Amino acid sequence: MIEQNNTKINDSNGLSPEGLGELRPDKGPLYAKIAILVLLMLLCVGFGYLISVKSASRKLALLEEENSLLRAKIELYDATVDSIHSMLDSLGLKSEGKSNPALYRGGASMEMEHSRDPKLKIKMENTERKLVGILQVLEPSMPENLIRTEPEEVLSGDIPSIYPTFGRISDAWGTRIHPITNNLEFHYGLDIANEIGTPIYATAAGVVISAEYESGYGKRILVDHGNGYRSMYAHLYSSRVKAGDVVTKGQIIALMGNSGLSTGPHLHYEVHFNERKLNPANFLNRVDRYALR
Image 1 (cartoon, helix red, strand yellow):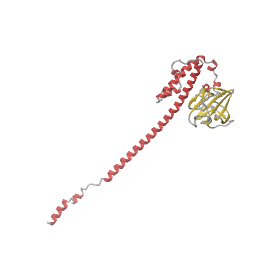
Image 2: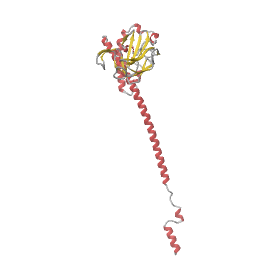
Image 3: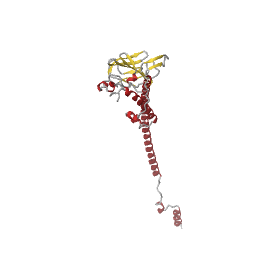
Image 4: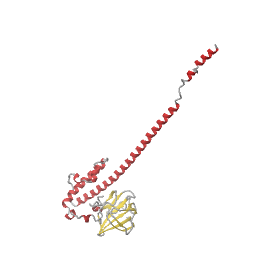
């Protein structure tokens, strides 16, 4: 009787040899492994997304920088065109012609057609229309010797012919009220504004006559190009040349600054011929191998 009772008790507790073989394994470690795997996958996805965001940010920054430089160039061209328009009007020549701008388009226009900034495209198209009108006025009266200039005369590089720096034309040639003295005076040069440290380029090959500090002009450089031509660069931050140095067209000779009598960072640029100051706008972007770079 006692043995039978013991057997029943063991069977009721599920501790028989047959019951021991049916115990379930512990699944805790498996769930932990799955959780770690999912966490690693999420980290990989997050890291990849972070890299893509940083890459997109860099591309956007580069695009904004390119648009900023392009906008500055267009503003410079537009200001020059407006200056030419004013000169034509003062001579009694009206530039009102409206022909197909595509006939006069060059590389800059082709690039603007694919620009993602519609404001830049509109600005460039307006500048092109102004140029077309100027060409229509000038072409019929252009001197024969200017139309048929020999290549060696154009390629000599002795005459200032390229922009001395990049930036915005802040003051043109002509009568003005001085921004500091408030006196009415004639401005014998061209002012181009930009940030301190912007490169300044020699507008023609020549020899540096002086690189020194002068009251009013601040740090300035005077370059002799021969045949009576000289160019002057003022309000510099620093000079990269000294008196007696030979420079080539397009060479960086200084950095833009704010020295002397100045209200902000800019370059004051002058062109002289036989010791007489000329309007620098008449010498910008002459058609030569340097201006087409």
